[in-house]
Image (tube, rainbow, N blue to C red; front, top):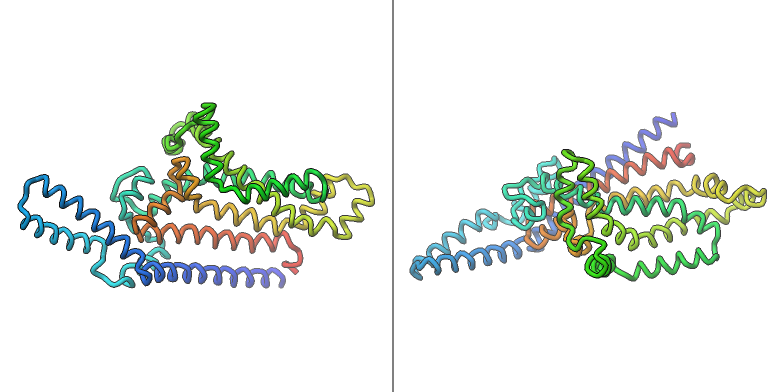
Amino acid sequence: MASSRIANVLAKRAITLTLALVVIMILTAVIMGASGYDTKIIKAIIHSELRAFRQQLIQEGISTEEIANLIKQRERELIEIYNLDKPWYQRTLPLALRALILDLGYVNSEEVANVAGTQLPLKVSAAILITLPRTIVMLTVAQIICAIIALRLAPLIAYRRGSLLDRAVITYAAAMNALPIWWLAIIAIFVLGFYLELAPKDYRAVVKYINMFGENPVESLRGILYYSWLPILVVVIGILGGWLYGVRAIALRVVGEDFVMVARAKGVPEKSVVKKYILRVIAGPVATIVILSLAGSIGGFIITESVFNWPGMGSLYYAAITTGDSNTLIGLIYITTAVYIVARFILEVLYVILDPRVRY
């Protein structure tokens, strides 16, 4: 009976989350189209291409009248290529609906293809699959390291509330919250890259080692570690304070509970109290932070990736936004939203496993 109730609840949550994904995709398409965002950027791109085309024709010595005719012809061709001859709802809504069945279409922008490190024609799904491992190497790994450190230290810090270590962590978290990660990246590259020459100055070469990982894992791993240790370190330094403070805040609610106080009064060792009496109780909320943070890291950090010249998902987002590449932008939003939706459903299942009150 209990298992059937749990199955019904999970099924309802799955349906609700799926509907949320559909609504988000449709709203994204409506906002992009109705606001005129993609139209303005595409018109600017067409204007730039026509200006370059005019310069080319002038250099070839073509007459002014013929240049005007060729410009008009090229403008009509570009309008058809970018679908500006159609209303916005015929351009963006079909993209969102096709994305729901994993038909993400093709990349329209050379800049997006450059981030992926390839040339057009290029499928949006291929561009995402190419750049996603780069973001995982840099950001997701950093999030995992922070999660491990926070899970081991934060409950102990909460257990010693008011101590010097506790005050130091609060100060560190406040300082890191005020400092942007991209600023830390600039300082790290300047000091460790240019001044001390302990780290690379440019990190785009990591793409080579990620791409060849299947062919030569040992050599590729060395290259990946060489180019990724500083970006990972910078991200860890930048976000670890928030991790420690967040898990500490959750643990503080439990430290003062009667069962913890009784365990301490009985002389139970500190590590046992933290592991058996605190971590078990906060497992659900902490799992929420861990899983949603890992899911969120998939989207990348736009400015931080730019500082490191790291062509990941953040750089792909930026290229798609600045060039009005609707196909790529819709595809990116779909993938990142879908990852978040899946993460939320995993959390629902974990809550059933970790929290007896949910089961009964």
